[in-house]
Image (cartoon, rainbow over all chains, first blue to last red; front, side, top):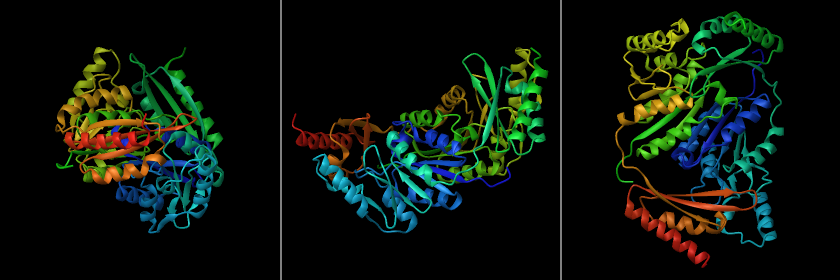
Length: 246
Length: 246
């Protein structure tokens, strides 16, 4: 593709994702909204609630990609260590963010709930962070440079991503078209390889499905160049028609 | 925990996972079966269909953890490059595996289907690999040293994992017990921190849920030491009872 696209990575944080107790729902959501925004999600990592692992993964990803999005570990309990780990990654002190303190103290006062030390934990950010609004449950996420730190609860993660998306550069979305065939991948793989080689500026993916009895194949063509996309799709259709003239 | 547990990582491979087109189902499955087997899944990475990215991630993970499990990219089409990437990671030549050729040529002969060059691609492994049986759709996975390379289609991934599990060392499974409370994390976070500090050899996780209206909290206590587990669970129950005497 001609212009370099904006790139992104995700770091999902939480022991519960690695024990199988919780099935992650945020990776798929982030992948979808970034793709629609024309930003390429290039890598995802999942790590547990360990400061060093989080900081190391974050440093690897933030150096390599334009943006990093994290999920999880920003609640009020002892296992919520993401703010400290992000601070460690950036070498920044972590302290209560004045805006977050004002926000949450007002929030709990309105609800006549005590602003406990545990709840105050949720106001802690690395120095200089800007807040990400949480329209679902008030406790904010935060941004440090190219890293957006968000909640793990899917409804909250999604609400925070809705705030973050307008801050990202608008990319040229990938256009895509797919063709489904009852031919197996093994029947069309050679012809598809030839088509992929002959068409520049497109990415051709081949995705087998298995319904318990037989395979079918979805051929997905993606490109930022509409003419190239259409030419490749036509070539795929012609190949399939030659295979099965019905 | 007293004895060092066996550790594992997963590398999920495929552009479709990063575009949001396919929601991964293999990470959750692997997490569950490893947890039941007493093996700690410590890290997961998802990368696209790019040889260098796959090889780099694989080398980082296989050096660090006892076992690595990969999913995806072992089919018959041009975008199935996992075997080559694994070969690159290990510095091993990749060629048709004689057992796999025998297996698949017999398989397609029985079905009166041509053994096309595309299908022959599925017999390629790094030199010296051993095969992993595929009871669903024949084309095998393979193992090189501590790396198990498996399919991305969930039914096939699961069938391959069923073959692999008996090959892994039997660990002492983590025991776990959970207590659900309608108290918010913010109400119990301070007391929970004190409990976590006072109890060694247990991991206490706190997991908020949000049903669209209010939060509840699941407190999950895990340990390989049953006495330590029970003591921590009792402490959590006593703390919650003191909070809400109903």
